[in-house]
Image (cartoon, rainbow over all chains, first blue to last red; front, side, top):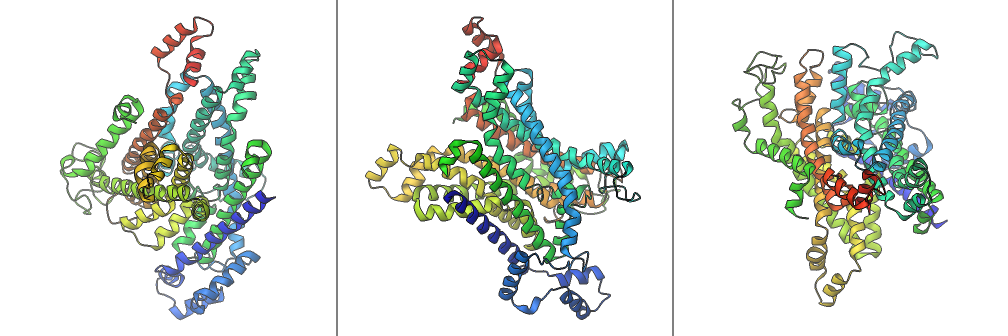
Length: 328
Length: 306
């Protein structure tokens, strides 16, 4: 019980800290939504008219920071996320977010899961066959691929498969000439548009999983219970998956939770390179245009996503591994 | 942890050579290119393909890409080393203080560390960088502010395991001051973790700084590899058929981050011999030792793993 309370209070405290930072950083720094809007309308509309437009969407620069801060906290908690005062002026933030979420979840979420599964399987085999062909050249290669600038990999893939070979589209989430729906044409277009960004993330993220799994596996293979299993004469495959891999995977679970939590926010640059209209793309829009309401909601959602997955991983670990229960 | 063991490890050696080369270019850019003002617009014809005169071609602004690359080295390296160093110092200070002091100090510092660790880093960096200007020092501050927490957790864990060792107890009995114990007794035993931490932070800084520069959040009027990519992307270099403008700076970032990553990974291997690559010589020796009971591979695995 103490464990649960501790975790939950940590959860709330972090969320509060994140929201406070995200409230004050943009407001205390130079630049404001009005200037951004003036720049976008190129001075064609008078500043007073613009100000009244913004204030009708809930932007009150003269209200004083502290009262604004408390209204902000209340609004965030009650789900009154307000309207955009940036690029899509007047559009409810909720609507912008709801439109972007499925694309990010689908693209980045699926890719993260695939990378985790693939990385673990390859890591298990590489760690088990110590000194084999796979094990000798893999680590050096992966250390390099795992640390490539991934947006650059994205651009290279565009160069190769899109500009040169013209096999795959380099932009957007689907062909805008199609009507969204469950038709084979539309689904095909969505998949086609997802291949390159997904592959970009896969290339740069799978290496980390393989390396940690391989290293965990090597440590686990030396444990007595693995030797015991060998002595019992069990089949290699059974020892590999049922004894060694099962335990070697434990430390990876919180890492996996963390990366699931970062699904919403961790792919800003991929969405930017591919003009993929997910949450990261919206964040850049919001930051570029001083769209405080959108920025606030996105940042809150990013933080909540990380917190929820970490919490889930904590409880999952406690259920899975008795040793974690004692630590509390 | 000796210098010799770094040179013997092939990954470390390659990383070290790449890093040394980058340092050389950063220190003496004038030696590597004859064009000393690569920023000036319109000196050459735009979008030239690579040739003897322009090794990597020219940008759509008529600047020599190779010279930009050479002169851009210093900024990336400066950001990486400075941010890496400051973040490491901060991690060490916070981590060790938390572990050594314990109690309420530890609770508070650990709480702050964990909160910073969980905050969505890249969005936070974007927001910070967007609203605090574009100088290199702003970039370094942003990287340090978001990058110290992981290391601090590691330092704390390591320092906690040291806290009740005899040699620290001896120092306390001798009546040494707290600062002396932390700096002169505890820190030296943590050198390898600190170095590994520095390499990790520097690597992270190269990638994050270049990423921020790539979306236009760096100093866009000066040369840096990420900034080159920003201009290449905003000028649609891919569509204009000027692939080199994209390939070259990205490759440079990749090489520098590979240098840090290889050194970092090699450090892990040196610290944990089980992870080192199995060599054929060792395999044969292990096979001889196993005398045919097991096949050579497994034998070697056991020798190394145990």
